[in-house]
Length: 309
Image 1: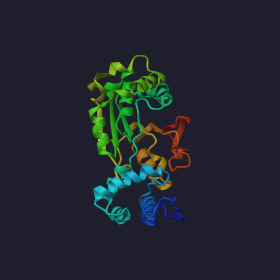
Image 2: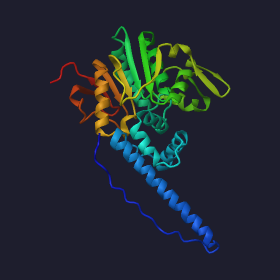
Image 3: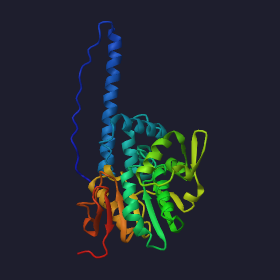
Image 4: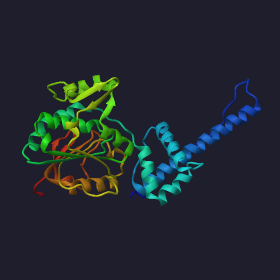
């Protein structure tokens, strides 16, 4: 883990009351401001503890969002102050796992980042076709939209029947949504556009049925999907995968934690297997760097080498 600590400077200042405020109301305002500053410090100390002990770096998250998530977890944990959470999560990994679920930032959509899915169609799907049985691991699948997108690619390539997709995430609520395959219909225009940009030749409507404000994907797409809870940091290998997709999950991991996850992916990958990362992620300078060749540098697609020089 990263033992390097960061220095935090806390600045305090005076609040000048307006002319119509009484002395009492100014005192109350000052107390509220002091409490807010203290809570902000507690949040920072908690995030520092998480980073140093577990390797997860949430310090760059939007402050208001991360504070709100921590406060929600604080209520569930029954703690009066955020500072109490520090000892709790350091001495109880199960509680830390619960905190992680609250910290999960769910950002996903059908065919998110269409150029990436287009590159999958052009560069990866033809290679997958050469295998009699295909195993795919989608790590950090969130609510599943991108998993169903992958299934559509496989269906249009005629290989969905011989593929098994393992989709994992820490957040059980997200997994439940993914298993149901039911989504709000108000995002359909964006999803249709993404599908077309990703090389789709038909209409996305052929893969779902709509009822009122919801849509449900056809069961055929999910027949070979397995959704499961999995912690990339503490849980084990996932067999020999031909394709591992883990996009925009590792951007807040420190270097040691990234290497641990990359080694997990490498141990779960067959020779010539393909690893896909997010646009802000890379295996360059990681422990497994020399074991992979670049398929597409811009889309962060890598292939495991058969021979390491």
